Length: 442
Image (cartoon, rainbow, N blue to C red; front, top):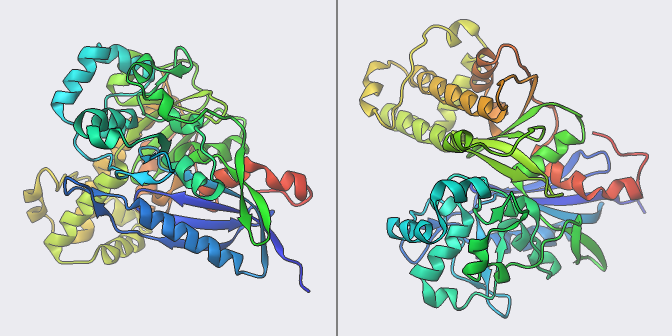
């Protein structure tokens, strides 16, 4: 009988796409699955992720992998976006929704919250995050308590999305630092503990104990049991890959719906000025702070593309493929320096003869804004010796070319390897160094 290939499995639950990869002992992907799961509507008629459909898809993929006779899965880990909370009742069943971080947070509740626990600037500085409404996942609980009291009384446990996904397989609940630390408003970075407002509102008791171990529980794979990781915030998982390969200093730009710049070599906690410019802190699994800046890159990009395609009656994939081909020619990239914003100024579309020219015009200010965010994460001198770029925009040739031109003194590296987020989640378990140390490499 042919020997089965040892693998580690990773699910990645992004806001837009849900993915699964099997990595072999050389951390090469050998099997993948992906799904774009449609949103559902919450009780207010607003879109939110369908957590039940996500759970069904994950279990379906797992069953399919169990049926693959050529692989032997040794461990499972999860990466997921960091702005989602899943709430469970005493029986461990989901109550409420996985509410969208784009859902408006009521002005009245904002006023009430900061009247009780402010001033706003001080609380945001101690929790190392700007006020972001529902994107501050701690405020999702605050909203439920005061706007949905009947739902709040059903909640026995609250889990960050990566830990809920791990719980689906292990049946064990935990909290961990990368999820607690990502713009939640929950964590007091000066005291390295939950902020006092979390305790005053009775929210701390809803979260399971914080663990710093690499895995927490086991799940069945065929006839045996394998370890399940605690789950990791996606941007933090991506950073782990690069920290294992480079002693630094460097920055990582993780691109997708958000462009997140991470600086694990920052020397200082946030300043008030950095906070005003949308900087924040994340955490490594050890609890060590990581300075970061955010820009809504992918979301704003997709809005611009939607306007262009509607105006020119063209499909997005056709537009982006054409731009990809033309961006190989420098003369086309530099035929104009025009900048445009078709979301706020749709009338500007009348000045363009082709969708490709319009695309390039709206891409320039997006790159400029992303570079500004990158420099903020670099701290005071703004020097960036090395910048790793990870995620979907690495495949956008026009974006990468404009990024190189905007940072001529920086060595920009786009590693030739699989998805950095999922690779980081796989490598973090360190399962192969025990079982197959002679094979481990990236």
